[in-house]
Length: 518
Image (cartoon, rainbow, N blue to C red):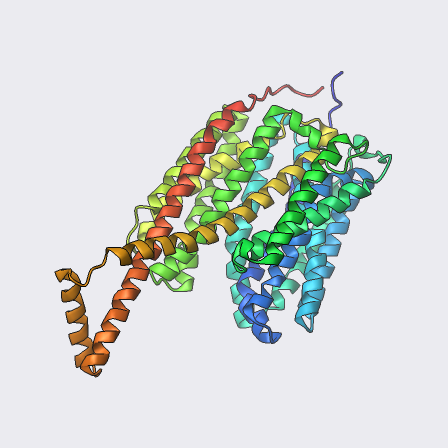
């Protein structure tokens, strides 16, 4: 039996709904991205260490990760419009409380609330957009959604840095209020619930919720604090890893057998959706791994000022933003979305690989072409990927599907950041040990370098003996720097390889059939 159409037939109303939900989604992204640059100021103002202040980020990520997969169930039980209004209002109230927090513990509690409400915004707004537009126009909707998702993280750190330095870190949270008021008004006037959402679940899956919350919270702490605690050499990290594995495995088994599951894992029976979920984890693993590595490479190895590093990380996002509408247009022209994603992934891999060809002599302009290549590739990944992944999903299951994809993106990003940081530290040590082992005091080039440095330092005012020790210290610093750049280049090659490795999965997906809904 054909599924009843759910899309909005009035084109003008479709775009008003799109603006309404995008205001809600962008609000959350601006806030969460802007807070990252304010951590040192928060620590100083609230008399805390940087390590303690990072719990401002970790606490948000934990509550956000827990609520993401529950969003579909919440929308089905309480209504999508009501959920969105509650989420926007709750996120804004929590933001104001964060800005007024007198101590770090209070701020952390408020961030947990903020993450709880903010976690529902991305999957809910995406589900509304997908259902508002007919299948043949979803590419345009996802292009708009993608532009908002890309622009916010580009502008937010600049906005957050300006507000923090010129005013106070507290204004990073207060800035949400005008966006929230606009979003609430637009959602109230234009967003509605389709008829099939007016259902009441036959029961509440308390066991599933409990196992999910404990498992995801434990996993998020492991990923966020593992490198800092030296991973499994720390008892509490090892214990949390065991708890996370046990709870999540039990959760999967329970949900597949539950009468009223809180997360519809059975949606993975659609091979296109299952392939999209797998791709999502790897794509965001690589993307966020590179987002972590590139600014560090610019600042720690090439000694770029922070503002320069921030500016020269922008071309990637700008290229993605500019070309996303073109990707949406090509989808509307019935281009094969699988081919677009496949080509986009390979182009993105080429961009990441170009980073591995840089050297000490690289200046800011050397980062332009790799950034543009990667950004252009990503534009032809994100839009068709967001469209094709949920293409086979029935409309009444759309909220559950977007919740799962949002959760996998979040997990992929967390793994990418955590593993990239760990590999960087470990690989740097490996290269350092190898380089030191290759040095020999009998090597005339090393002795010549040492003599030249000793002579320079001696003429600069050090005694001859002290200058000799200082010369060896300088040589060791050079070895450390060489080891650092080699470890960065290794990681860029690894990330490019992962992109190429995952690209064939695209062809597991079925080509969408754009049939107009009756």
